[in-house]
Length: 459
Image (cartoon, rainbow, N blue to C red):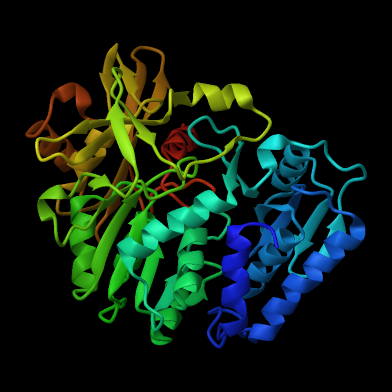
């Protein structure tokens, strides 16, 4: 056995009922999942896997994927999640970055390289290397320790209090820390996770029909759900959201969709162990639009440049093979999030933008998040996302992607007049795009860089 997370899975899987383990394929019997772990462990040991050696694990939000992770950890190796539908170039970049010799797909082992990678002290006691592009677009391998993530699960267990009779609906991919901790927390609590391999309205409806009491997702998912007038989830007792800012109108619509549900808006990064701040809108309606207050054992400060910095005992061990970037990402013991923030008089923290997202329009610095929030106050706007696009005359101009609410009519002229009554003229977007959904990146989250791609297609 290697590490605290392996212990959690080893204890949970044998007693877990997989009768609704997935909404798209038949559930696996507990023995099947446990036997996958044993098979993977034996196969890796037979091939001579080295201690703390990285192993690629293909993840498709299948119950069997948990068995694969367990087997890797029991063999003393480090799991590197890769989505089953990832492009060949993504697979190649992960193999190159990690030097991995082996790839696991459920219980099938594929040899990808010859010599074992050199020993990396950073990977000792590590559970995962999760690659995240961040704001630069260059993948970074975030090394996550067994004990640190297990300790974070303890904090989340006290905060969220999953129950053994809960059915936890998970459309979040297990290749990302949000999806992974939701499933691990459910297992640790004795609850039943229902994995959704591919997010669709029908898949969620099937999960709700199966008795789901908890739903986890990102705001983009909830916008899609709420755009379908036939969707209803009155029996949910808890809704988890994170990964993006939760606008006030969306929070209100989510509460109407599930009147009995307690909504937890969670903020955090892969590098900090996730869930560093929490806001419960129903209990703190005046806090909507903020990320709330720190979770247990997390502290923060605002740097001189306005950047939010977080101190946590649950954060990453470092970036894989990049000690320089690791050092640059910290100010002392505080991780530099890249998010610009301010503290409101009530003590809650409010995000005002990303340092690298700031638009310089004619030399004037503008935070696009501020414009997003103003646009979402219009009753006909379901979602909005602004970004800077290079411009020969002004340096950058502001472009806005707009999703109209179902059944409403809205044009550019009306939006301009609406904004002019609420903010300075130089903050009003230069170009508007009306879309069926916000442009998204590879994680499924709304992506400002993709707004610039709309501009390229239009030109």
